[in-house]
Each structure stands twice: as structure tokens, then as C-alpha cells.
Length: 376
Image (cartoon, rainbow, N blue to C red; front, side):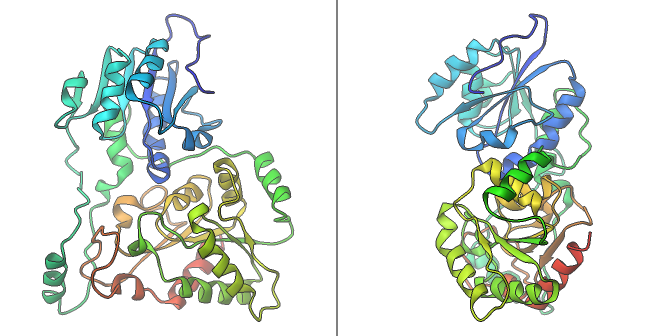
């Protein structure tokens, strides 16, 4: 729905959570919202979210209602709609100045968010970052070269799992009395939705579906080479008889077309089903749930797949599985693969040297990881 609920009793506590704007981050915020629901079981919890993410929250157990906004809408317009909801508590999940400003414009009496320059004035409860917080600092070319020179035996630098992004959101929920212990990210998708997406896209019920997602919106440094995706997919198809489903957004459609054509070349196997740019967000959730396993880069659909219960295999290069890995940190269903590059994670959009963090992850290693994850 596009407005705040209006039928609850006057004494019901009304909480507004200002959601984050990126798909992966939104999924990683679900543990905090689930803990908030657990702490405030009788509250009316409404999520303020960008319209592109509205489908993510359908039937979610932590949320009673959704208010959406578009890129064209001003903070003042959003503030007026917040005021109509007569919320008593607001929590700003993003770190942005605007998210705190919107809660202030909405005249919410209790406004909770992370402390920061330019936003403190709009918050009534300013939360300091947890001791385990790790800032994702982009390395300079000088930093990268120094790390390579100082590492005669190549090894990747690991980061503490306490810095995972789900802890960032849980720490905010804890400021409202929620349990900060992590739970797995969760999205609610029904069997009927899975069946509907199978029918719409002719996925069938007799074949084992493996998903492939070779794009990554952030930049090429997060993308395992496309020719390796193709080689791994062809080998897995030979060994398992799986039927590939290719995922991606509209911008990934040309890449998905290339992968689809290469998988069909000289192959007796049925052609893959190419869904890149063809699904709604809700259909994406259901189609990912229909897959036995997803081979993917570190990107939004990776988080969605894990949150609907599908194991994922992910080559990580410029980013950190300890900070933004899928699901609950340490979940043995997933396979998170890294190379031995001492400059990884660098958090850059493009590799300034030779992309060794990703080229160091072999096709054979990925194939074995998919076979292991797909056995569950």
C-alpha cells in the first residue's frame, strides 16, 4: 500500500522505519526489522521505502504497512505524508542526511539514527557506531602497490565478521530495545508465487534449476570474468543435467544474451531461460526461490536468493564476504570464494592493476563449490 495504515487503535504504538535504497542493503536490514518486531510485538511498524523496492516487503512478518516514494518526490512532500501517519517513533536505517531530515519534517517525537555531521540536529537519539564497525575504505593505487610489495606470500586480508552490515542495522534496532544478536535475513515468498513464476516463464517442474547472475551494478571489479561463468555453467550442465536460469536487471540484458548464446553453442542441452530485465522484483524473488543454487557475483540478487532459502556460490574480489556476504554470517549452505590477492578487498569499482583477486578464482573451484552447495 502507498500510505500509512489508518485502522489501528489509538493506543497502538506507531513506528516508522526509514528503509535503505539499495536492494542488497534492504535485504541485510531485515534482521534488524525482525528483531524490532520481536521487541515490539504489538506495535504498528511501517516501512518508508523507495518504490522500486516495495515488492520486497510483501507479506514480510516484520512489517505492517509500506509507504513508498519516488526519485521525483521532495523531502518536504515525504515529510507531509509521514505527518499524516502520526508516528511516535522513527528510525533512520540509512546514514544519509536526508533520511534523518525526513523524520524531522514528519514531526515524529522520537527519532533514532546514527550520529553524524549534518544530521545530529534532526535526531533525538543519536547512536554511536558499535565497537565492531568496519568502514569500507577504498584503497588508493599506492596502498595497493604497497600491499603487494609487502606480501611475498600472497594472502588475502580478512576482516572481522562483527563488521558485517547486518550488525550495523541491528545496533540501531538495539537502541529501541531490540535483541542485537544476529538472525538470518528473511524474505517471505509463497509456494503459489513460485508456481506462478514457473508457469509464466516456462521453467517447468521436472528439471533441476540452477541460477546464474553474472552482472553487478557497482562496477566491473565485482564481476568474475564472464567467460569463466560460461565455462563453469557448461561444465555443470554436463555433470548435473541442470537447466540454467539467467538473472539480471535491464542493464544486464546484453550480458545475459551473450551468456545465453554461448551456453547454447554446440550444446545438446535445452537452452537456458533468460530472465534478465524481464521480471518484477517480486517475480525475481520467486524465481530465485525456485532454483536449487545460484552462481552469482556480489550483488543484490545474491542477498535475495539467500533470504528466500536458496544456497549461493559467490566469487568475491573487490568486496568482503565478512562485511557484505549473503545470509547469516557463517551459514554453511553458501560458498563464498576469494583469491589470494593481498590488496583485496579494495572496495574499488574498477581494478587499477591486473584483477588478480578474481582471476585467482578458478573455474574448477567454482564448479566444485556449486556441486557442493547444490546437494543440500
